[in-house]
Structure formats: structure tokens, C-alpha cells
Image 1 (tube, rainbow over the protein chains, first blue to last red):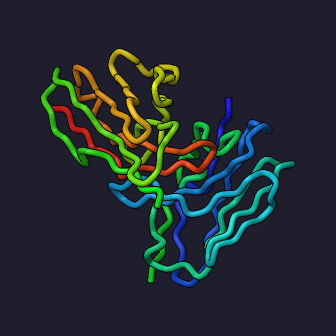
Image 2: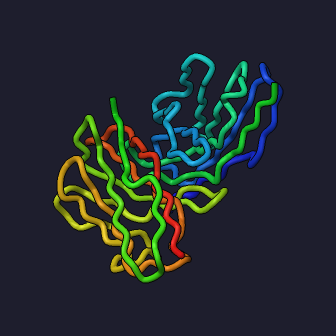
Length: 112
Length: 114
């Protein structure tokens, strides 16, 4: 079955810096890759997603890149702000709407 | 749009009792709902997939007789933890999706079994 590895497990940056979180997946049939932000005591919130027919997607300060050949995808957050501090999860599935397999999460801390 | 609610948000119960958690899609019809479990500082682990009107599909290692799932309508799925024990204490989160669209998560339910 699918396995998703996520790095780093913790990431500390200064306000205004960029943050990059990387994930790799094992199943070449996977073609849907969402990223979720989870604040303490709350459910995950979708922040961006990408499908396999696209190599990059951007939404304001957030971007995701996908390399299907290497089976890895990354989340890029630019101009980080303290409110970006949260746990970020990558996930993969073989199509949108099927069960998601999650990475172990990255705790991002943005200090002002 | 795409709001998913859960009720209750937190529950404390005695060992041996049963607890029901509701998951509702408020502004869309969800053909499929998923139930996840999350321990502190860990990732989300899929427990089961439920399609409206049919039996849930459970992941390996999840006891279907202990975690009863009912998906009676396109906007409501329930998870009942039967004969709960302290080791069942966890954060339970549902997600809902319509057709092949993105999954939207509920806010989670914190269960504490004493």
C-alpha cells in the first residue's frame, strides 16, 4: 500500500522567512496530493492541493510542487507569519475523494 | 461552503459505556465519509470508509464490532465507540467528500474514557 514520508518533523523559522516541507510517496499510482494545516485541538484544514497532471500550483504565499518521476512533492510558504505556526500534513491518494494516506506531520514554528 | 461539523466536540465517559459521535456535511451531500483517529502529536490514521446506504469498510486492525459506523443519509454519518475503555481515548475526526471532490474535515471530537 501507499506510504508517505514527511520531513522535517519540526521546523522553526523567523517571521518573513520561507519554509519548505517535503514529502515522498511510494505508490506511483497516486495522483492526488493535498496539504492540510492543523491547529491545536482542531481538525485539519485544506490549504492547497495538486493533481498529477500539474507540476506546480500557487495560492498567494503558498505553493506546492510535484515531481512524479521522483515521487516527491513539497510545500513552500513564503513571507511566513506567526499565524502560520501549526502542524502541516501532506497526504496522497490515487484520486481525489479516495482514502488519504497522511505523512507524520511537520510542526512549524514562526517566531516574530 | 464545504463545512463539516462534528458533535460533540468533547466527551468524557466511564469505562464500559458507549459513545456516539456525529459527523454532518452542512452545505453539501457527501457520498463518502471517512473516520480517522489521532493520538497526541501523531498523524491521522484512517479507521474506516463509509458510503451512504452501505456497510463501512474498515482498515486492518480496526474492530468493526467496537467502532460501529452508520451512514444513514448523504449528510450524516455516526461513529459509536462501544464498551469504551481508557485506551480508546483519542481525537476522532471525520471527513466528507462529494463524488470525486476534495475531502473536508470536521473539527474533531476529543474522547476521554475514565
